[in-house]
Image (cartoon, rainbow over all chains, first blue to last red; front, side):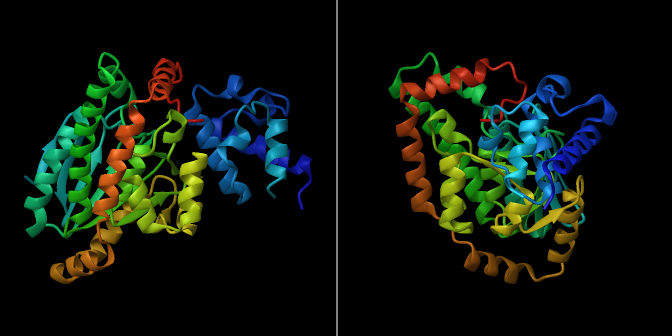
Length: 80
Length: 267
């Protein structure tokens, strides 16, 4: 089982790759909506990429209102 | 007509498959413009029965296959009308789109939806009218209609019930959540999952395989395997029209229309 720190690191790596930003420019407490996204389509794409990477299902309503990577990591960790 | 270049969609006969490309920005919203061209396509589909063996429906929009009904147009058209006229107007639209999707569903040609990105609402219903769904691994399927106080109106419920188990039908419809391609494959909605950007390529390979078979036998197999749930489709139109006149629907549509998000898809 992955630790929450490992999960977080993988999320940040995936987000950096997906949004084409240097990994060191994003951190766990970042508001990813504000920092990386223009619309909810991008949120959907990130959600799909995370599901594919972790091999989980993450219903939209579980991430509704989640804007920081730390909370997102805890939602994903609960499904691993 | 084996070739058509339209405003919202185009088609051409290519290697024995009639390829229908949707290209109506931002994400192939289905309103009166696309409906009119889909009606033209249905006529071309009938004419192509002797020259094609398969149909491939895909999107050229980066955002996805289709975000579904054009809710902005739906709201603008309904706003000035009395509830009775609103219901009559939406029923007319639904009868026309059902006629298109029923023709696609019943076509003797084997039909393949090659989908990516957003496959929501009416877009999902268009894909469900096809025989096979090839899903890009970044595709996302959703019936968000309950968020607006509605049910799917383009035949989604009966066609979903035809294809998958009731637990999945209820989960998709009653939670309004979206599912990815892997899940869609697991529950029997999608036939194949393709790598990112490869759904059309995979669909063309399937179409090439389909072209090897006797058309009469393929058409007979399809009729046997895939009956059209006409009575349920009719009841779905009635239910949609009944719900559509409720004030909560216009309020939900207003919020959607006034959203500043270019793709207000998340719940």
